[in-house]
Image: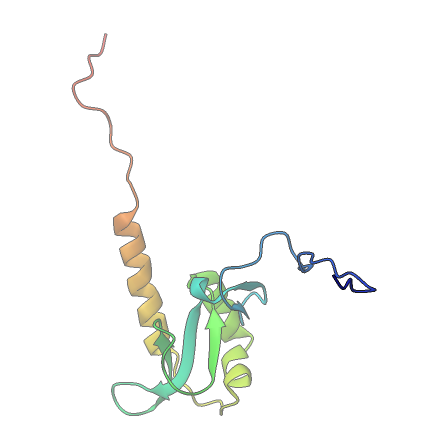
Length: 128
């Protein structure tokens, strides 16, 4: 039986963190933190209902072209708009309307508020 002069030992590959993120990791253009792409809202340059250039939400992450990612929170959205991060990230001109994405985030906030459990006082309790 032939033995290799240098035995190889298989070890696990070193990673940068103990808990790797599930799937691809992207950077939020608002707060500039890294997060899993599934946690962020992808935004692309497109057109609004009137045909004018606008930022368009891409929740399915399937639209063609360059995309920018932002946390779906009002804080990150406002920070990204204030910093003018979208024209830079999308490499487009300054004339993009932000209304379609703002409307999408408002709808998400309404859905989140309606799904959250509200405090309900117990019924049938006797008071002394």
